[in-house]
Image (tube, rainbow, N blue to C red):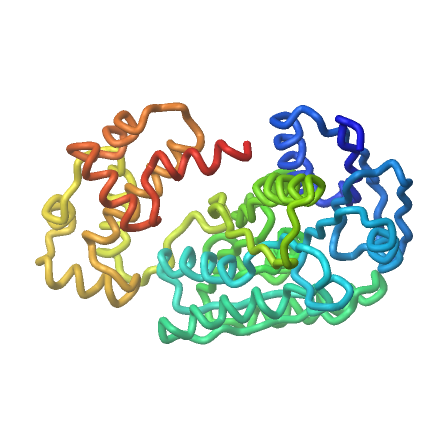
Length: 386
């Protein structure tokens, strides 16, 4: 093997998540300095991606033709699969990197619950391999909070069947209990739901809030309202898949594993930027808390704004949000801290001050309690693959 490692990456660049994956691979290559990446940007389901004997390693999607995998085995070329989870052979003979579908579903359910929704729905296409697992995790979280989850399935993968699917979708939206929080399988499905809601006269936002998956910024910002979406951290997936492939090329062998990459966060935009709480005092308290996330804030401050007793307001918060006023204050401040840690280069002490904590130790303690990491670890994990 030459000192330069020749890596072929088979990818579908029309997908935003694949472009994020490519960025992660490139970030790893910049660190090791001895990778040459050859991009096969036209991999389609069922096509036979080709590669020569000069290739030292392969990164391919879960939709790769089995002939590619067979040839890699025959030529003893290290190969890592990325994309969606699959247990089909011969995929199990290789390491796989894919999004943590259960964590994605739970994250969206928690996001909508914190906005006070009591009515939930999941919109998906069953042809996608992750559709069931993602939706089941969402529905399970919803049921744990005492609510039910409605489902809508697109039936027609072909263009000629879309008109019928849209007719059914419009009718389904009109039958839901409003306001409703909807989880869409991905950003593309979410855009279809927003379009159908407009045509059905269902206000979004207002009657309906919706979250997509993959955070394709071009798509999310091209629609009105702009779409909130799960950042599934495909950049981290690309970095870690490349790092693992490099280890295989160096001869570090191990049993093939299925590596789940947890989502990073929800990029909140207009499609979920409202509160579905039928209690004016709770809404007033929530708006007060969020408008003062950068200031020192206590439950007593909130009570002074809404003029209710602590037990009364706490009970109402528990009824609609599942937690107390004090919990809401901490969650709001930690959410602000996360954004500042990832989007600025402010030192942690300054972040603490910007989030209204009296001392940096207070931020450290609460941040670790909520995330399991210190603020520095949270930032370092992100920067390591950026």
